[in-house]
Length: 323
Length: 259
Image 1 (spheres, rainbow over the protein chains, first blue to last red):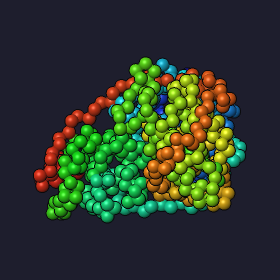
Image 2 (image 1 turned 90 degrees about the vertical axis):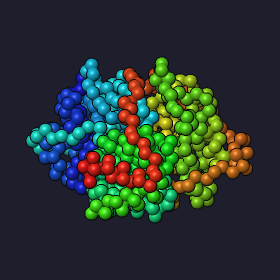
Image 3 (image 1 turned 45 degrees about the horizontal axis):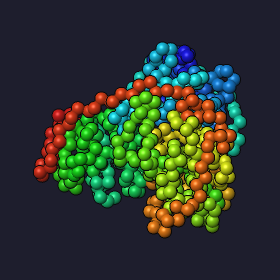
Image 4 (image 1 turned 180 degrees about the vertical axis):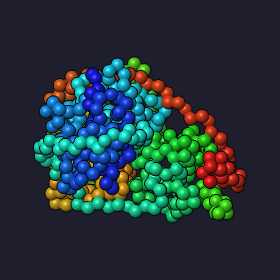
């Protein structure tokens, strides 16, 4: 199957396409054919210039969802285009909450399989070969579709660089409306944004994360202080997020953010598979943990076997002394 | 209120995972246990049924060889019964094939609410629950960190990139729950004893009216072409803290010009 047309699911946040969608668009350019976007929201046209700059020729606008979750209506719109014979050969989804919802719905609607946790996508023999990190990234598995398209891939953040190619603003066309019935009955009543200060977790040059080894919620203040001193962002393992010590927006890992900072400092984090997949591609990793057999040390460039309650306060004092 | 919980029985995550060199499927031989991620859905279901003043919690699972050890754990927590789909033709099923089987089995229980984990611990494709919802024609709310029933609707706090959304959906609906939603109870001795005699209905693919060609390796329409060991990170330096560990960190950060 040749790849003539690729659609990239493009989420818009704070008036701009999310970085993961731009990463997918950038990579899609290298796979041949035209690159188009599927987007939704009140003012999709406002991102057409940015999308064009990254190589998108056309934006298929699903329109304002009026409080619906994107899963059902966006999948229905893509399916309508496919069923009308005007659809893509490949659809790339960012591995976000909404991206996974749309991909799952579309897969069932079209009766096409979906490949998830993709970390690389290459053209081979006229088709696409996807790569997946499994077992916490210790193995890389290659896979491909053997049936009829469109081929659906859900791709992890930071799998590709986002690079503009300098195109003109993308054309905006209305995506066909489609019947969703009861599947689209859920409504968003209110949105809550958890305020954070400093650089964004998935964009920061330095990330300092804390885990269960901190012992208690109050000790997370050490992580925040260290992150601030290093002009970085504070992250967390799933364990302490689930325990309610810090909000979900701090979570690094499979179900949280994927980070690739210059330095990742893991403090009191054992390194469960679900955490490793979100940070193991950091350029440098420092781990502080009192258990020398903790899996986190297997990915660390520098491992300090010691008590976070002793090492981290001394680190903070030493950094303060430097001014 | 009747609640169905999708549960997966998986190889013990503490043991190193293995892939069959021939089929490249995950090896699922030997004893399977209840996926820890599913214990939250089971607990949530028990609490919601309780708060609604009654109703059954039914487990739905798909596993090879009529495996029930993981189901017994969830029954011991308090679920009333289980539907297990076990069939040789299911080996090598992908997420969509699995969803077709689960959807057909769930339909039999006529639930008001279907709960599932956001993703399994062993496969973590994370798409099966939403595929089930689509196949059943149900609305879905994923990544719930709080779930409440309010009359004929379900209210959910749904995790987002920036915080959370308050979402409301009419019932019946499907909701996926994160590991933070509730604290799962430990099965009591009484519960463990009672679980031994709770009904587990075992069904084949044919019982569900599904064509065997639609599931398993035959229905997957995708193949694994290669499995390779990932490039290991080169061995790092490990220092035992003798009171000066922080200085080594400072030195490292200086080398990287971070400070």
